[in-house]
Length: 509
Image (cartoon, rainbow, N blue to C red; front, side, top):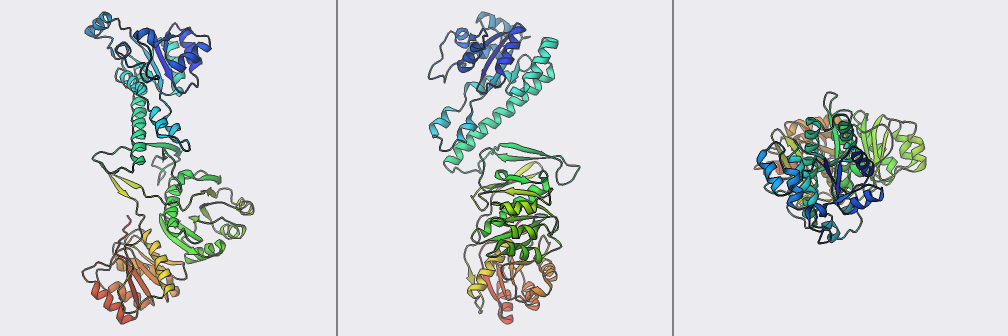
């Protein structure tokens, strides 16, 4: 029996080869692997001895030869294949152990040269792996050192691997090479900012962790991250305290981070519950911002997610432990704050240094039988156009933009009401805009008087404006663009309300 071993990850390879040799296997190898095995005292046959052709072009060409691929691909129970192999002096290769050039580790190095990345694109490895995986009925192929043990166990017990093991190993090969090629394509595409939305699309992600369950206990789930870490993403966060993150924790915390990125210019707290903001507030003191965010909806924040774009200090921590929270994510926590929050050992604390980093990218939604892919909504507005007789003051315009950032990140149909840079009420996820407004007004109570209102899409009729006027709202921001915009503008003028059009809709589903 003959095995070909050629690995970049040398972990466990000496022990594996030693046990193969003890069972009477001949070992073929190349380059660094052959050197490592010989240093361990093993007898190794160089691939060049089999091919009769030396390694060349700095090792770029060594296994791309008919005597190698014929030995891997020849079907053992096909008489014609066997005759051709005999005529061509091709000896079967029964076991192939390959792991690929470390392309991922190379591109993750700070300041890596493009030429170095290219040299770490493996050619012969994937070719041999795919050949062996295609011929899994006759050839055992190993791409992961974690599988050495099962292969050795079956060889020792039965003299061969089982059909099921060879099938499973072949499947792992095709998953590995697909991931490898996708990683390379993604690197090359990002290097030149090439269009993502091609006629075909492939994506690759690495598992960060298995999750206990998904949105509900009967659903399996796992968390995956992009191969190259993304600044400001939850995958880059360091957990300092608390239980393992759940599916809903991750989804809601990501939503909180998306909202927080809108407010990178001033100290802000975002509270999220079930993927919608239930509290947003800005203030020079982060503890005060938290109190304002909490008090805007003290019921909904219970069991919620908190995101801060400033260091959590002792004063903020003392306020936060008064309420049951699931997660707090921030650029950091003072030692005094950590000591206070330690009183809630299950509370998850996440440290994320680049919390407001907001690089344009794409988001994906799986639908039955397909995939929806779109750019992330990182824009805020096209223009700020005052369309009413009454113009908002500078302070009111600042407040309108605060509200606009909130409604942009609220599930549609959405209405957000704010006052003094604090979200006082949200009307998310309604099937009509009037219903969203009525819910927000009801939630705000007396605080609605003197508030501003943001709507994620235009008003098709003037009914929402009239309801806002009746509640005491003083200014409105919305995309505009309805066929009956004139009716809404007229209603604002009659009520003495300033209204601003942004020229940009922000549906969020």
